Length: 368
Image 1 (cartoon, rainbow, N blue to C red):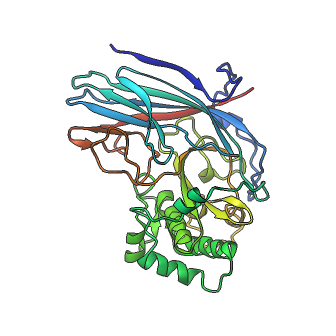
Image 2: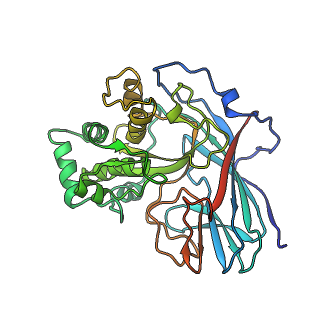
Image 3: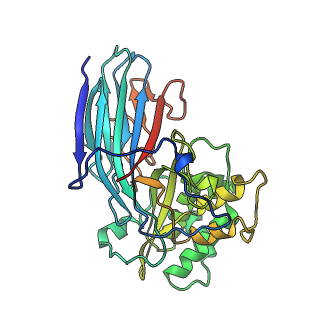
């Protein structure tokens, strides 16, 4: 067996692996305050996030990619990664948008191919009033560009102009678009994974139902079409919400399926600002057995207000990239990357099909 092991690659001085870990999220979640949602900065938490991929015996050469937390900002600090595998594994990058992954090659005939990746990350909540951080012009230009799944012309531009008619300034436009997405799009639980984010098709068909990668992509595309820099932030929920909303956190140590895409807009007076209209839609549709369709409902109003400008730090970001060509892949570029991926001579594995592409993600909070 060609067992590959790499030491923890620290990116913050003085961070060690010794830690006291909680036994279960449900036992350590803060006591919920019903019908309240008010994230505050400064609530830093550190997590070890473990992704384990196990494949059937490989009939042909196979490559696996596991995303790493690659976003380093005022609200998240990646602290290091380690991995082990019986394949040839290494850290790779896309070279364009800052996406980092562990890539593993398995030769044909590998009996029990596996890779296990551990990432340590420190994260905090975001709230209005945080100090403004200026962004460079190139990044802002990139946050206005169309992508394969997020065009900014045609029906996308027409919709953005109609939704922002009469709005003056970037904040007024963003407020109008946030309200428009919440009012017109909806959470569709039957969509696989987090959705595809094909916003032109959504608008042309009038089917605005989807999940986070659909609804927040719609919001981002409309913002870009209206001239406001915006981007999706692809990541995963790590722990329960502190405010009692089951749909705004992960209540289990098994995070497989807890991937979640958030959004940011760049406001001239405030810098990058947190947004999540998709989670408003999720709470409306799934927090209670009945579908709540009013944003002034006592359960919905706090998240409708709060997710405009804030989000909780019970979540980790992987990247903000679109149209990602995975290093070494023969396949086409992916619309986004927040799931483990695998490819062999027959093409992509289905990342949503556990019978042939088995993986598990778990996390533990690290206490100082």
